[in-house]
Image (tube, rainbow, N blue to C red):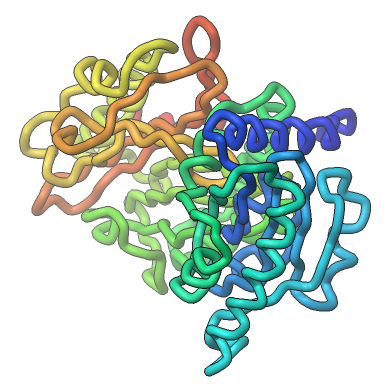
Length: 393
C-alpha cells in the first residue's frame, strides 16, 4: 500500500469541492446526515451502517468553511485531529427511537443550534441545504426563518470528479479487494456453500482495512438467473457458474464494485456458459469503448452494445454508474431503457463502473461482469485488473 498517500490534502480537497458547490448555488450552509456525505466533507467516520438508518450524527458546514461535527454522544474523541473540523459537539437526535414522544421538541432544539450556527457562518444567505431531513426537522428549520433546499444534489455534484489523490486511494481499495478475490477463487471448490465463499471476501476486506459490504450478491448454478438473488446455503456443485458483485466499501472508505463469473470445479465450460459469458464480456468492453469525455449519456447509450433480443428482458438497465465512497451520480442507462432517464455529459475525473448481466428468461444460468474505470482527458483507463475465467472466454 502507498505509504506516501497524502490523506490530509485529499480531505482538504474534498471539503473545498463542497464549499465551491455552496458558493455556486448561493447556499449559506449545508447540514449532512448521510454518513457517506459526512465522510466525504470531513473524513469523520463512526458507525457508518448504523447511521444510514438512524440519523444519530450530522455535520454543519457553513459557506465560510466553518465545520461542526455533531457526534454520537461520548464518541467525540473519534474525530480528534481532523483538520477539516473546527468543532465537535454532541448530537441532538430526534428520531423516534432516541426521542420517543419528545421528537418534535428535540427537533426544535436541533434547529435552534443549527440556526445559531447559520447566522454566524452563512453570511446573508437564508437558504440551507440538507441532504436528508425528516418532517419534524424540516418544520423546525423553516420556523427559524430559513429555507431548506436539497443537499443531496449539492453533494453528488461535489463528489462526481475525483482528484488524483482520490484515484490513488481508490487504487489501494481496489488492490485490497482484488486480494480478496484471489482468496475467494482459491476457496472455490465444489461442496462449499455460497455463504461460506462470500465470507472470504468479507474477511479479507476487514483484514486489509476495508469497512463493509453493501449487498449479498453471490449465487451459483440455477440461482444465478435471474440476477439479484442473495447468497444462501446452496452447496456449489461442479460445473456451476458462480456469479457475484463485490459491492464493498474498502480502504479509505472508497467503494469497489467489480463483478465476475467463475466456473466451479474442473469440468470444461458448456457451450451455453461460454455463449453467455462471451456476450457479457463483449458488452462490458464495447461499452467501455463508448465512454469518452465530452460525450452525453444519450450518445453513449446510442453507441452501446446491442444485446440479442431474447436476452434484453433480464439485461442490466445501466451501462454504467458513478462510484466514489459509494455508488453515486451519474447513472448511464442502456438504449433499451433510456426513455425517462436523465442526460448529462461524461467528464474527466469521473470514475464509473461498467457492467453487464446476461441471462435468458427460462435459462439455467446467468453471467455478471463489471469493471471500474476512470475517465481521463483522452478516454478511459481501467482501474480493475482481476482476470476473467479463461475457461469461459
